[in-house]
Image 1 (tube, rainbow, N blue to C red):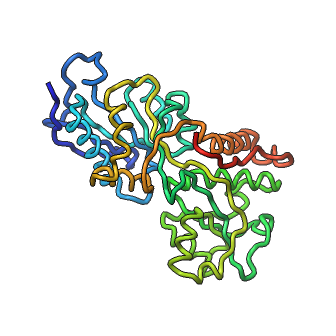
Image 2 (image 1 turned 90 degrees about the vertical axis):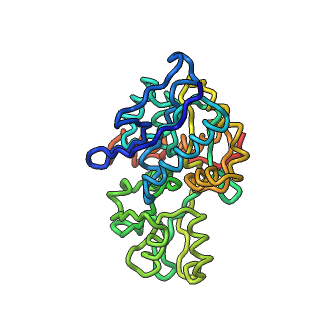
Image 3 (image 1 turned 180 degrees about the vertical axis):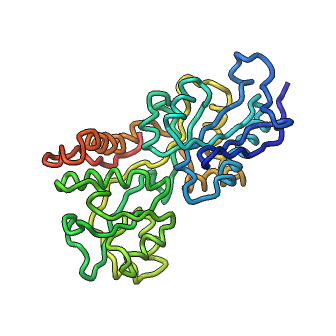
Length: 330
């Protein structure tokens, strides 16, 4: 018997830490029917990290995922109930994966790094933006009397654009500072986080801050919108390219919806539901790859982790680990 999609309710945890959309009837979760050992009658449980909805409406984002998964389940007769759940804490998500209470995760690459023990290294879904899976970052300063080197930024003000595709920016800059034998980022600079690209870039443009950390694509967009941005701001440092966001299945998950999702990726641009998911990734399309394409990110995350483990002072007198290099997708 094919399961129908019941109505959904939004449940927000205390302090806004957890938002979940669970299939409900009369206020209680509806149990899956059929053989509980069959992977096709157990609800497909998609986990989404809170970092993925920074700066957007969480209810709208999770609802769009629910509609997309529900459409796949209905059209392709997969006996599964889509139930996206938003996690703020990777420790809680790791426990859910360990207990097989989540079947797939959409999160940033640093979060995948923390959860890699539980997630598949193959058949990863990543975003393609501007014809590339790579996102590279820029440290931008004023062209009029701005810093000429990292050391000249000591004690200055940094505007840091935050968002899922900026997930590797701070680890990269931390490693760059260590390579220059300078203190950790938030000790070396006074950092203000911005949810909007324009706020971060224009804060330097108007002299409210001394530097900004943004993506190359974002900076190019700002220059197109206002050529004066390109005339008055210059790049002090640039990063290699990194894959910033990942959709990964739990190790051992073999439900039919897994293959359906992978097979239908090329068709996502043809449906409103699919286009909403592509926008959720802040991308132009989605493609399948494997963990080899994440290796540059793993290198910089490993180096940043080693710096944290060594303490605020130790390790600054030696060369930090590699910052990664962009390579072709396998």
